[in-house]
Image 1 (cartoon, rainbow, N blue to C red):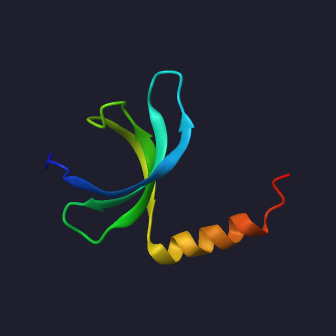
Image 2 (cartoon, rainbow, N blue to C red; image 1 turned 30 degrees about the horizontal axis):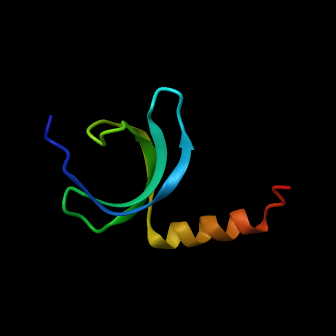
Length: 74
């Protein structure tokens, strides 16, 4: 299996903190030398291990932002 390379371009913030020390984070990441994408996933405290997550393009992030802004989250 080929090695997955990544570079965290911008750490945007922590979405939630896990009891096991892993945090769910929103970051701008470049995967395998491709264009940067927004990425939500869990990270170990040292950022050496990563969990499953989702990546979205800038256009998808804008659409998601608009959907979230339209919600009444109380």
